[in-house]
Image (tube, rainbow, N blue to C red; front, side, top):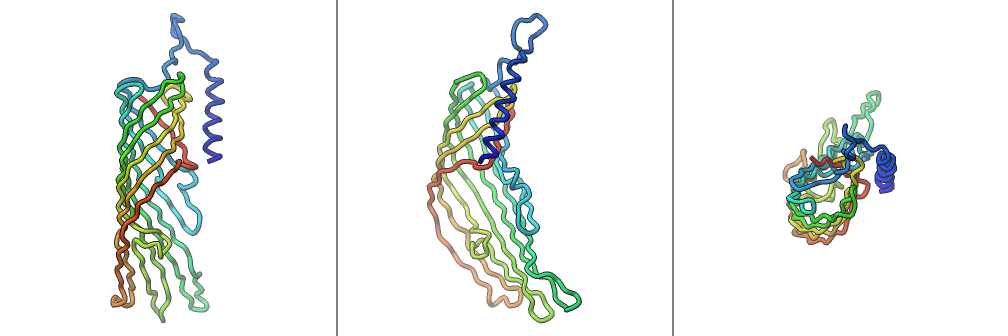
Length: 251
C-alpha cells in the first residue's frame, strides 16, 4: 500500500510541474490541454495490478495477471457503466527433496495450481471537483469461479507415487468455488496528463460461495480415492486493492 501511495504522489508532483508549462495553439487562444478528464461519450480502459505478484516468491513460481481489467462507458461526464474482468493463474513448483545420484536418491516435488475468473458489471456516479480529480461512488454485481490443485510426490520403492488434492484447502491451495455477490464502492481518479489517470478504490462486498466438491486422488491405489462436499459460505468483505496500481486511459 505504501508503494502505491508513493507512486500516486509522485505522479501528482510531476504533473504539478507540467501545469506550469502551458501549451497554446497558434493563435494563443488558450490551453489545448484544459480538458483532462472524461466527457459524455468517453470510453476508458484500466488495469489494476500488483507488480510484486507478477513473479511470486517461494519455489519456482509464476503468476499471470492477478489483477483486474476494467472497461467504462460514460453516458455523461458524471455517469458511467463499467465491466470489470479478472483472470488469475498461479503455478508453483517446490522441491521437497533434492536428487542424489550417488546415493540413488530421487528428486521429489510438489505442484500447486490455482486459476480463477470473475466478472463484475456495475455503474458509477462521478463528481466534478476539479479539472484533474474525479471521485466517484457506485454499485456492482459479482460472478466468479476458482479451481485449485495440489500434487505431492512420494517415493515407494523404485517408483514415484503422487497424492493429488483438488479444490480443498487441505492441500494449502484453498477451496474451489462458484460465487455470486454484490458490492458498493468509492474511488478517485487523478488525471496526471490529459486522458491518462491513476487511482485507488475501496468498497464493501456481500458474496455467496458454493464450494466445489473436493477430491483426493492416489496414483498408487485408486481404491483410496475420496470425494467430499463442503457446502456454502456467505461473506461480507470490506476491502481495498491493497498494493495495487490502477492505471487508465480515457478516449
